[in-house]
Amino acid sequence: MTRSFFNGVSGMKSFQNGIDIWSNNIANINTVGYKETQPEFASIFSQTLKSSPIISDVGLGGYLNANAINLSQGSFIDSDNPFDIALGGKGWLAVKKGEDTYYTRNGSFKRDAQGFLVDDNGDYLLVANANNIKNNNGNYEIDQNIPTDNLINNPLSPISLPNSMILPAIATSKIELFTNLNDANKINTTSPANLESDFSALYSKDGEDLKVRNGDSFVFGFGNPATYSNNLISSEICITNDEKDGKDLIYDFTINGKQINLTLPDGATKEEIQNALVDKLTQNGIDAQISDNGIIISNPAKIILHSNNNNLPNIAAEKLIYNANPTQDNEFDTMESLIDKLNTLAENENSNISVSLDNEGRIVTNNPTEKTINSYILKTETSNDLFINNLGRLGNEIYPQTAAKSYSFKVNKQNFGGNIFDKDGNKDLITFSFTKQKILNNQILWKGEITIKDENGNIINTTNQTFTFDANGQLLSPKSITLNSPQTMEVDFNLTSYAKTDLKNSYSFSQNGLAKGYLQGYEINDNGTIFANFSNSKSIAVAQIPIFHFQNPQGLESIGGNLFRETANSNKAFLYEKDGEYIPYAKVLPSKLETSNVNFAEAMTELIITQKAFSAAAKTVTTSDQMIQKAINLKRS
Image (cartoon, rainbow, N blue to C red; front, side, top):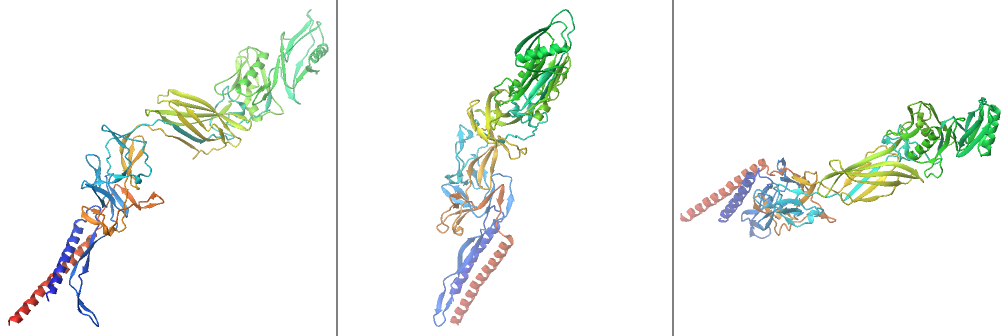
């Protein structure tokens, strides 16, 4: 009979614990990161009353067997604190209290007076510290020589995050330029040609590639008109009867570098003059024939006739041929060499005439004389039509005090660049100006001018380099150069040269320099890495928050304050890894907090049920007492 007392008492004790547990859950319904505990009851060993054939036994009461942790995910709320974090998934944060390490789901952290990340109890958040924040007599700066890869492998420790910090400047030592030098048949990246421009790399006024190649030719002339046919330059000189003036007729002239003097009697007829001139020219190796109007002089290369006494018209006509490597007098490659040849021809007509290149890339013939000068362009069997068309009105009558001008000749010029930094963190500008220079031996040559200027536009360094590409537009050399000012820098070139008008994803400039940066704030990414953000747009990892796991999280021991510690039942805390790579198995959600996972309605229901059970257990004690009193009374009576 007394057994019922103990059953009632054990029930009251158990249900009292249950009331305590559920009331504690309700009390923590607004506690960040709180995990609900659920009481689990068990029966005390029963006593056997009868063994066979059917065992009869009676229980000896109940007791609180365990408090199970409800590990379900709580909901999330936003926070203005950048150091507040929530775990989206399974796992635990580690904090240090004294010399002991505890685990929690409460991600509410702030910086204390020393800058350490602590929870509301002052416990330190444990992180895999990069240890790259250096204190120099109270001035904090980042040591950029410390690697920040695989931070999770670093020892765990609290971290202090200062309010102000500097990211020191890094001088640029490595530059990489990746781009295509557009070599399409028609481009819009043009600049006026200059004297150094090679005709194999020139473009028309409309940006169309002239494609001048070895052997392309034309005839240019001043003075008496000429024609070109059957590989011959021919010029007809009109001859008339000599009027008698009491003086002999004297011809004094040079032709193709040969001095010729011819004297005819006063009053010589047209026929006599024609025959005498043809004979004299033929004797000197000049092809001359009599025509209806006079004589025709022919030569496959040039007719340069300069009369010293004006009895013959001046002729300066020459077949000019492009050659990438000129070896003959009538061959040209650059704008300068062509203009030199045109000037030589002009001087044979009139020494006052000059040919030059203006700042718009036009060839200009100036006629400062009082006489109209005749100039002309003749096509040959190997003429480049686009090139001839671009010469335009250069071959035309040039009136006194005027000039004849070609259309603009253009070069393919493309500019790239970006900012670099010197040792003091000053920002300099480096520009790469590429000008198509020449087509030679199935190779494309580009002239590269590399210029470095300071912030005020002052030139620090200029370097010229020729870049060679194969016929397919692949860079042959150089693929890397070294610049020595303002510091030693290696420049790598990842260049191509072919027709490509769409430059999307075709250009990049990178360098490893860095301006001095000032701390702007901290942020935490979803992998738990803590970054320091600086005014130079650089973010540096300073630590990583590890997410711990347990083989049996139900075996953790709660010590209050949302803290748990490992036990033999939970086993040691560990990090998940796969192939040596850290796997958090939960996302770190910055500026968020996980709320309590207590369901208020469920907790209140359980509290009421437990309270009713407690009352029922108490009733069994009262009933047992009444039964004992009756038994005592029976004995007395």
